[in-house]
Length: 552
Ligand code: DCP
Ligand code: MG
Image (tube, rainbow, N blue to C red; front, side, top):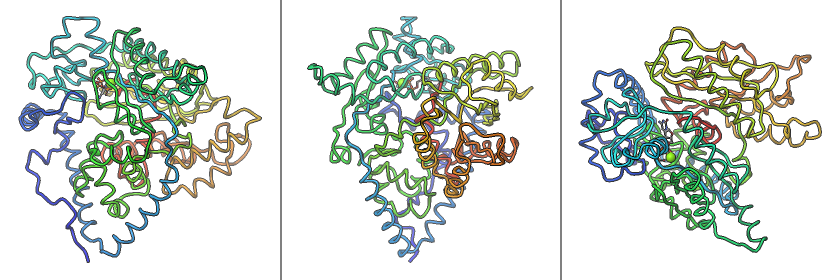
């Protein structure tokens, strides 16, 4: 019988219906705020602004999506739900077999990073509520300012309404990059293959480090190692970091936020500890579950990780395969990937930065050159080269677009990357964000002649990770074109591109078609990050884990 009993049906108040404008207080230092009052100020301050109109347009589309979701849910029969639950139970059993509790993963995240750097260099800011950015947009705020509801991704003019005495300091990107390099030097002592997720955060696997210490007769616990690492960071930068220690990256990231600022949290490597930790965790705490997913799942009555498990049949019946698979992994505390090592696989490396909106062509070109150089350095550090250069830009109307181009040969040369990226820059648009991304990555270990088995495995891993609905067909395509990393121009095998957003495989049906696919992906990602049927969403969560972003 059809029914809606397990779906949240309360009506939203007008203020609530503007969910996107609501303060996101899932940020360290923002607990226990008077959110009703803050939301009212935000609403009043932003009405009529372009930011508001953009958010409103998005929210209307999300509301339509929620209405569809609820309508589809109401049509589900008990029989369908029973079947859905059985399918999810079977998937859960398979996922349990992949659970890996053997690794010690650490997520380290600097505290109020840009703000902390500015306070370090200008100590009188330490006692004041301050933020970094401009009246158009803030990149972060210190912990004093967070008490007023001021946070990243909030326009400075709204923040000033929340906290009139707020000091806004302009971003000094080269300075943060330099500090980031100092911090990364420390990371490398504990895991030379650490995975930087942005300028101020990284995932480290310290299992081997701990074993080596034990073998050398200098045993230390994971907590001691991380204490030591954080002390070294403080010593070299005069800045504090927080950390989470857990069996996988997804959990470690949640843990690093637990005792922020300047703290750490250890989650024991047992299934019981993981399940206990996860059960009451709000889904929004999980990296990759953002505002839109929170709203969509919320409309089904899902607010915590335990709810994800309890309503698993709805997830199976109403979401794409990649989405319900991801949700189930979250519900079980397993993370996006099992312990097969693929957590380290990178599909793209990118740098991006937000700035005061400008249409000044030379200024934009300079930013692209700087980003390309940073990207080249990251590729160098990671021992990677790439063939696809993507330019991402955000207009002053907040529309996100990308353009992609293919290089003849893989490279990590900053000048070559810059030339390719500059050729993609549109003229005459007012832009507020630029990003340069390198995909179709190769490394000597993957492309070497004697490494065919490694190469094949990597390709399979990539295909599995893509989780595209049309995966099987695309997998066949890819098998025909086994030399993905080095296409043979003499064969007629279609050249394959990897969409840098959803990671689905695209044949070379023209750059225009490819670009429009990517634009579509990005727009869907903005609107429906985890629910799109193209599989972009949970790939984005994965992408987020691999991509090295210069700014979040
Ligand atoms: N950042 C940005 N735009 C955003 C979010 C963040 O440019 N929308 C930049 C500024 C931050 C840095 O990235 O200082 C790190 O982001 P975090 O999310 O780690 O935030 P903070 O380090 O500022 O604070 P926290 O103490 O919560 O980690
Ligand atoms: Mg941080």
